[in-house]
Amino acid sequence: MLGSPVSQRAKTAVAEFLPLVDPADRRKESPKGIRAAILTIVAVLAALTGIFIDRAVHIDDPLFVWAARHIQSHPADPYGFSVNWYGESIPISEVTKNPPLASYYLAATAFLLGWSEPALHFTFMFPALAAALGTYLTARRFCRHPLLAALAGILTPVFFVSSVTVMCDMLMLAFWVWGVHFWITGLDRPDHPRLAASSVLVALSALSKYFGMTLIPLLLVYSILKKRRIGPWVLYFAIPVGILTWYQWATKRLYGHGLLFDAAVYANQFGKVSLARLWVNAAFTGGCVATGLFFCRQLWPKTVLAAGAVLALAIALVLLGEGRIGSFSLPADRSAQFLIAGQLGIWGVAGLALLALAILDAYRHRDADSVLLASWVAGTFVFAGFVNWTTNGRSILPMIVPAGILITRRLETLQVQKETVAPSPRTLVPLLAGLALSFVVTLADSRFADTGRAAAATIRDRYPSESKPAIWFQGHWGFQYYLETVGAKPIDVKRSALARGDLIVRPTTNSNLFRLPGWAKPRESFDLPLVNWISTMNLKAGAGFYADIFGPLPFAIGPVEDERITVFAVGDP
Image (cartoon, rainbow, N blue to C red; front, side, top):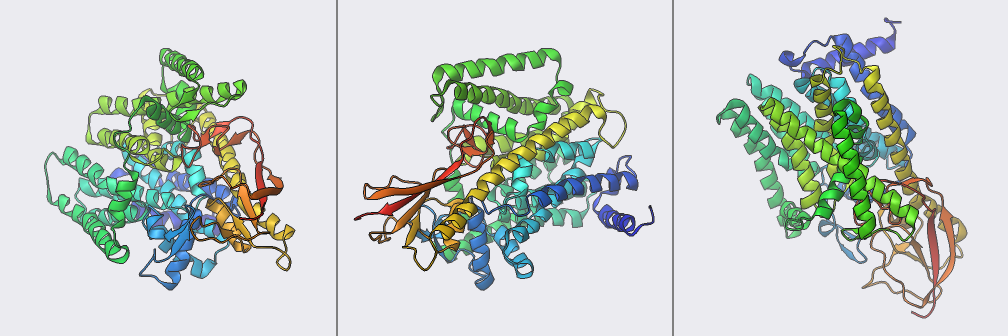
């Protein structure tokens, strides 16, 4: 068995992987232990990708796919086209608030694999795998059980859901975590090739998603604390700064405004700090990184657990009394109120506990490594809740790396773990709980994604091309992507000329929906099935994984109605 071709290929893969591990940072792990860790991570992600390989295009996925298609014919002008995303056709450079590297990646791989959903998701399996392996390597610096740290980070709802999108978040995280790994290992000796590689990876992270540029101050502060002085290493920060400066200049020449600063202005929510925003942000943090809750019995003494339970109950009762949190009003149904308030209490306390874990670790160790982890968590938390235009799971994603490490470091401090690379039985149950929750959340999100594709297929079948009237639609996201494939057009409030007998297709849950005038009469409706007890985007359930304007929870457990698609007939517009 050990001499089989599969085993030999595994050994070869590990042998090629080992040079990326800093020799001074290999701890007590043997090549066999590293091989087992790598294969465990690969198996988990391969299974996940395989299950959801045919998932429909969803939320902002179309923006990245359309840009990638345009790049294939206009590689020097990634955003040189218009799109109707807000109810009228405008340049996509005014719509998208992300840099184009993910679309360039898609454009390159699509030459070989095509544009099918399985091809798109297979393409983005590699950034997810790179992020997971980079998390494992980075964790080796900070704790004795890096596999446990990696699993505690990736077996989370935010990592699972982000792994099956074709947006830029996972690509940004992959470059991010490898940039951190090469910097902290390169700074020790110093190793100039590693520092140079890190600076390039930081730039690539920022060109995948602008949040990646926050690595520059994060690593700068870490380096000063580590070395106690400014050294020649500081010159390497000129590489990402120079690349981003060039990007701002180039996009200003192309589109009349620099996209880097434009995104910063769009995201800026400073000054809008409130207790409601703080708690929603904490709830998103706790839910997205749910392993923090599942490990709570091992992480905290009973008195702290009791205090957390009391706080969660108190918050739930306050929310029930107020009937709202921020701009979100609890539904009229009393049982739905209890469900939403209870989940807000639990996940909010879990999010605060993760912040406390970072503070406690920094206080205990008081070194550059602990400050790096605490700053990583705190910076992500502040950006997600008080800088970005909306709190969402995608903004929480970078936190999974330090979260897994902090959980493991706390377990090691409390001597819960034995000296072994593999997770012990006591850690297996929380990891399996994280796996189960992450899977059902991703399943619910994927089922919702599939409603756009199913709606388009239903419209195509019910209104065949030889007899159908002009078909228009409201709503965007994946719904728009698929409706356009069957010949329907998005309504442009300034330019569309609707005629008597035309049809308008309208989903229930989507963005930028507006009330139709009286001359649009309902003609028929049909329902598309969802997971009926958990959701990621549902106003009634309070779930808003991609934008908290839909709800104060990243996902919500509770009754979920099927997605209703309504077809309106145009009278005399």
